[in-house]
Length: 303
Image (cartoon, rainbow, N blue to C red):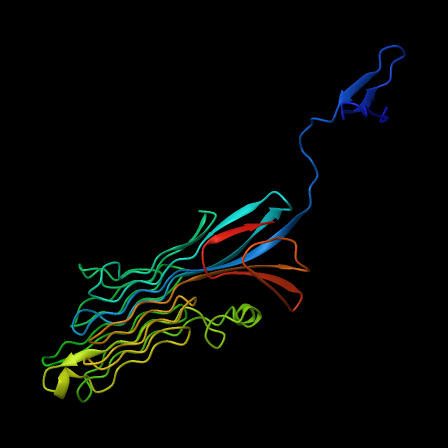
């Protein structure tokens, strides 16, 4: 038993499973299942698009895109992972203010950053900031933080900053002619990934957009101090008569708010595994004993 028989014409392979004189049993293993194939573990970082900034008294800084990290086992030459990179939301009053989700094989989903959508709905991966005393948006548990609250004390209306992956957005302050809330800081938990792939902002991802506001007693309807965007791609707010800064591309940063608002930054998906290159897809780099596959637009990874 255990002897192999190869039929070189048909390509079939048999193993002797019962050796009885005149009645040997040869089991066909050529069409069997359960093939032994090499597997390895792939870590992933999935970041959604950031929300767009609000306009003046119509909401605050855009919330950062949600951040999801994990790992899964893949099979060489068999597993294919589909990658969708979410886009940044447009600034108010354009439609689609919320950021778009980023996904990995339709199983792992990072939620797009929150923003004003015409009905004061700011929720998202991180929540968008609010204005005029409205309730700011909430972040998604495990993905981001809530936005800051706008202050309403006629004629001062400083907006709240958008939430970031590392901290909530700051509230607007009734100081002087008003201070817009800063966007929440992003996360630097993946600074090694950022360095290896030359992405992020100073090792951070997913910062919230800064909040501006309006003051009817100030020349040009300007707020004294616009809020800064959160480190990690969050856009700075600007005076009500000016244009805010957009969220940085491929960071998931939220857009800043102002008289002319800004879009949120697009998301990013990064895969990595220990050792030399095994899979294909995305932009491939090697650093610190890992191979990285970076997707700044949608595509697929083949193990």
